[in-house]
Image (cartoon, rainbow, N blue to C red; front, top):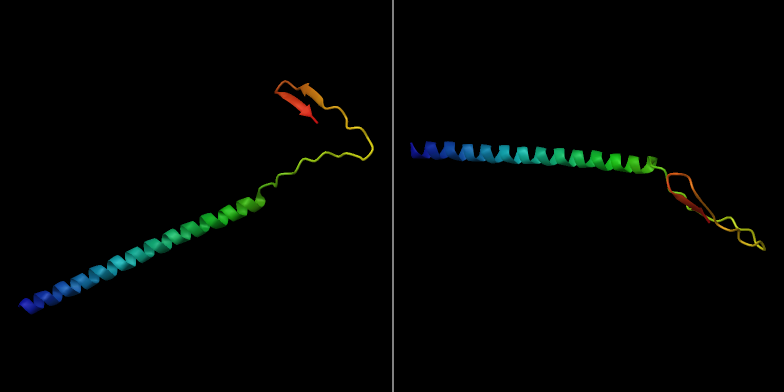
Length: 81
């Protein structure tokens, strides 16, 4: 009787361990899938975002630099160098 009880408890322990392993593995795969979708979405969003343009001054050689223009359009002061 004792050996049958030990056999059932061992089988139950092994079954519980296997179920816990399968649950943990599936949870890990789900988290990996969510992380990959977020990463791919971030890459696509970065590609579609407009790139900033570098502001440059168009100066011709031999000319005097022009005076900066300063005006207020009602929303703030604008300084055009």
